[in-house]
Image (cartoon, rainbow, N blue to C red; front, top):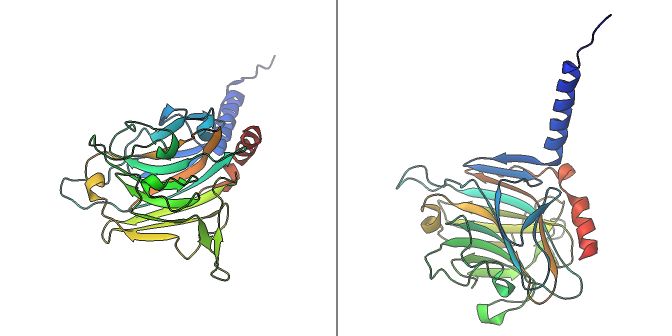
Length: 287
């Protein structure tokens, strides 16, 4: 009687399952590059942050909460002491939504530590107001509440923060159309997917921020462009990159769907075909 071996079939099944996993959550992690087409368990979570079907949820529940997620693998912006500092490029897609009222917003963060010391809710976006405790950070904030006490320009803005939530530069969230050059406002808290590009040149200290509705091409005209020297942070040793967010007196949701970052190069484009858009839409309907 002919005996058939199941081993070849089991091997094929294993690789099919592996391919399916890689399709739903494509992750590349290294000392000079990060790519998250969906998120996995190699990030350090704090506060209310958690994973939901390859989606990174920073807050999605009770009011007065905050959440933070930093990549567990630090980036090396300087290979040798006294050597040149690396430039960086990053892009990510996020969603902010509120059922009835405004929440606060989220931030992309570079941190000198693998945790955010205070992780404060409310207007602090999961960060702390200043670096009096020696913690050094850089953030690009996407703020949905007007807080005059920290210099906010309105309740829908993008700001650049260095060691303080008092932004050194900020502007109403939106983009300039490539067709007619007109400025089009993006309502950050509307519950729609927004894509961001942040580019830093370590030689000229030029920092550029661009955003647009997902999933259109990166606009040619920048939203924010300023000169800021990040050497004091980037030369300290390991730098941890990630996101933080907070709510205040109402339930709010802050999600990151995909993220790509590259040192001394251009961040890889995100693979929109595998980002967890469906999960984000379902969660938004529940908030």
